[in-house]
Structures are given as C-alpha cells and as structure tokens.
Length: 86
Image 1: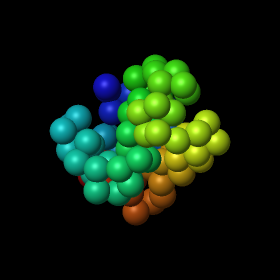
Image 2 (image 1 turned 90 degrees about the vertical axis):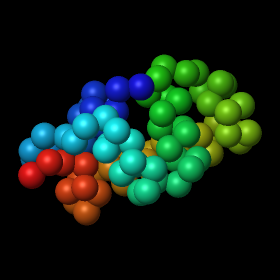
Image 3 (image 1 turned 180 degrees about the horizontal axis):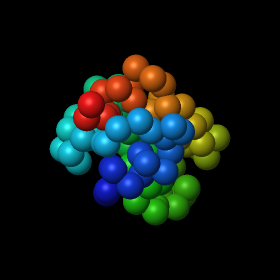
Image 4 (image 1 turned 30 degrees about the vertical axis):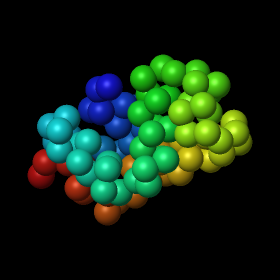
C-alpha cells in the first residue's frame, strides 16, 4: 500500500511534505487502533467491504465507522504534524 498517496487523498490542507513510507506507517500504527489501521489499509488497497468485514470479523456498519474514524484522525492537527517533515 502507498501510504503517501492514500494520506494525501484524505488530508485536508496538507502543509509540508509527508515523511517516508516507513515513517508514515509507524505514525499510523501509533495513532490508530489496530482495527482502524486494518480497515484503512484494506479499503485503500481496494479490498471490498465484504473482504474487510471478514478480515476484522465485524459487520459493514462497523467497517464504515472504523474507516471514518481513521480518516477523521489523520486530519487532526496533532497527527498531521507527526506525518509531515517540517
């Protein structure tokens, strides 16, 4: 998965350049819950809702909630600062 591409798509008002793929992955691991990260990665990789539901063993509503929560978190100023090289 290309974290740079996915995050650029989801972050409003990105100031600066995103860190390396490895650094982005580490920040996301620290800031998102395990399920949020799994869902975010799965959906960004193009997996279907059905596949994602099986991956986390939960229903569609929960998958959508987790994805929205992950997207909301990456837009928080505190987290954006950690994702960007200043």
